[in-house]
Image 1: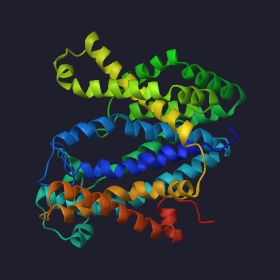
Image 2: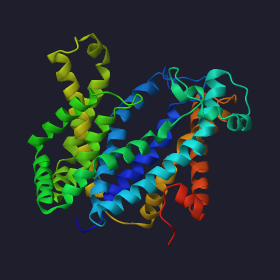
Image 3: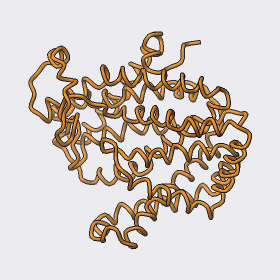
Image 4: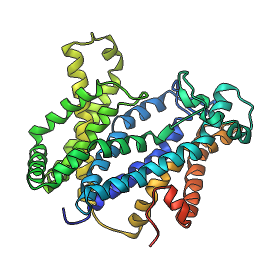
Length: 371
């Protein structure tokens, strides 16, 4: 793979920007706990959140796997490992000890009735208190929050090192290209959903399906080994997106039927497999659309591609803090949603403008040194 795949960068940027309305909506959705909640709760937001949630994090892990392959075409495995430890490990530790603190402090106030000042919360080390109640750091104490994605990427990068080393060898590279060409054939699109169905049923890690996301990471690594997959995805982008949207919507709408089916049973497997096929075909359609419409460089992409990682680290904390102030106003629900969204976007980008100009902050946020 000799050239840069700009559509991979664009899809990553768009996926990160989508987190702003997604996590803003968590302040207003019904049922599920969050660090702060408005009194204006809408059940219909759960449907939108549920639909996006089916493919959003899988897309980010798929793109991360593709980026790992592309990075290893320019680095040795030891250089790649060192870079992953610095660019993932350092922001993870910094994020847990600094970025997460305002989030969990708000959660302690909103969900646990705490009246503790944030200064007292820090110096008393309450922000490191292990919270074993349901909801975890939504109620205060130690939290990883949205940084679980960075933790998983670090683990995946280290666990997959044997695959990376093998993929750099001559026979390994040929095998990867062969699998990428096979998976490019529409008939072979039926295989990944079976793998995903199997991994989704494996044990969770702190409520997150670690093996499920590892499968997307590895699939992303394989798919970019040969241009054939991207070319086929580009050709079938509209049918793939349509099929994926229909299957995913049907899967979400069938939740009562799924709950009524025996587990295990063949009907339940069929429904769950169809749901996974929906996720996979949506991702194929997005990759194909990206390959067709977004595979060009631009100054906007250069700026946003560098900004996307710090914005990911910052965005949820900013949303929670902005939301903490907005939900206590007398504004209507729709105005509150707009205020949280626009306020968090503005504050996050303003903070990024500071981060990108300070060498120490660039290091702590996993950015490369400024040129």
